[in-house]
Image (cartoon, rainbow, N blue to C red):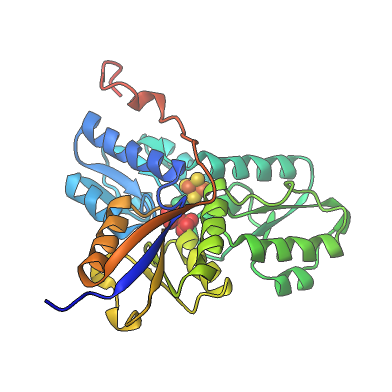
Length: 323
Ligand code: 0CM
Ligand code: SF4
């Protein structure tokens, strides 16, 4: 048998599931257990194809908007990314039984935006247009109350109604480095701007970017496990490239790996976005182990011990109260 080439694999830690994703998936799974199929889910519960397919197989039905759901007693779950205020309002008016899987760290940003608004601030949201979290955060306030800024150029062009009453909030899954620059541009122009200490990027996004930064300069290529619609996973690929790694690719799972890219590399870094299950990381490691003589070590840059409570109604399997 031909001798397999040696490959040093460095696994980034932390990687993969965060507390908000874990909670959101549990909400759908527990709702299926407690109430039976179907459980409707508004938007991909988290941005991972494999997770969505797995839940579909168990009886979850995914929709983009509530009006796609027939009149039903079945639960309706809102995705981890959060929803505009109009969504729970609409669900209530249609007498739907809904469970909100919005990550508590996204809800925190909603509360911040609301507070700024009540204090009379004009609000800037740093984020990516069209992303469901951005749609949800903007939708906490009346139309026109929040201006979206995506880049330093946007920050430099922005004309506020009153520069003295500004405040900013951010999407939770942005690039830490890009966001720092955008915040700096805003602060340079509007020194009185209100906002969080740094930004609203969550611990999971920050830690996964830090881990990639530590590993990317040590390896010839990086693989990030995650789906293309996952903002935080896409950011990990960018961070790897910027940290000096020549090859960095996002793959949903092992079957997507383009082997022609790796050839005779001697070292590889592996990470996973916050919505990517560890089983898919293992699948990728196994695929490399089938082609290379691999040695795997883990580079740990932070410990994570955060867990979020699931809604009370799902903590018991009793349905005595009807729901
Ligand atoms: O926001 P993003 O596109 O990264 O979502 P995701 O489902 O991949 O990751 C978890 C979250 C949130 C909010
Ligand atoms: Fe919450 Fe951050 Fe995970 Fe998004 S990536 S679900 S904000 S912990």
